[in-house]
Image 1 (cartoon, rainbow, N blue to C red):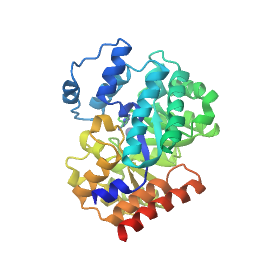
Image 2: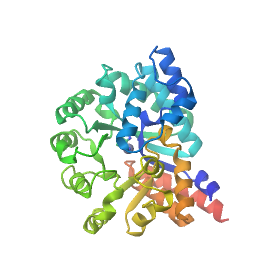
Image 3: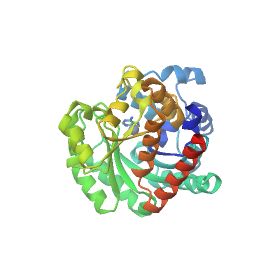
Image 4: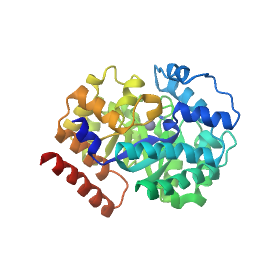
Length: 336
Ligand code: ADE
Ligand code: ZN
């Protein structure tokens, strides 16, 4: 089963580039930028990565991202992630980045996007990996700040496919960003949003009805409202589920209680993703293996999840066809 998971080509639809910042690279960049970090050893860092909720994690995640200053830093960060994609057979990825995490510290939007773009071109050239960018607004900040970010993004509009909404969910409902999402869609960005990770089902309703999202990031809590489940199925909206993240942020007590199989059984188009792999202990294959073992998922289930990842990506119809052919090549190899 693990070999099957590893061999399958996959798409990742929920990955924060700042969350792929491995401690080793963090130390290296902190040193060259002469920035103090509150850890002396990699072991100390790993000990600090014990979270009791989303906010606990976010505090450490923003502190880590604080060492990223130069275009080269963003390039190095992204190249390290693409290397993991290559190792995990992720051939298509939709990368979220949080401009405000950097612009709030005085780093130019241009510095961030140029570093990411340089890595994207190189990853395509070196490993054939396709990737799209999702610019995520930080929901703990104001809608005005999101509008400012939208404005800063416009010269780079052709490089960005989608807008997202992340950070502290409780107390920051999707409706707070109604106007900036409308404006973003007018600029051609596809809307997605984190909803129902920690937040209540009302936030998922708002994400779909008010922000009119094309996909829901996390969305696990939809299972608490049968009408919502039916609506998600009816509107054919995919969920980008992140098993190891859910475990590490205590949204799931033990992996055997993870809702992924229930979501699939309800007819929801779920996908598996790594969210912030450097913080949650695993990239794509590790997420698949963890959830497969805990929920005893069949090969059919794995195949459904992988097909969902391509079908509900923002790739073109033509690209999707090619991706699915690659998937079936591997399936046939394993069946022969
Ligand atoms: N930013 C990075 N990871 C996140 C998560 N899992 N939820 C909300 N915001 C995030
Ligand atoms: Zn996320």
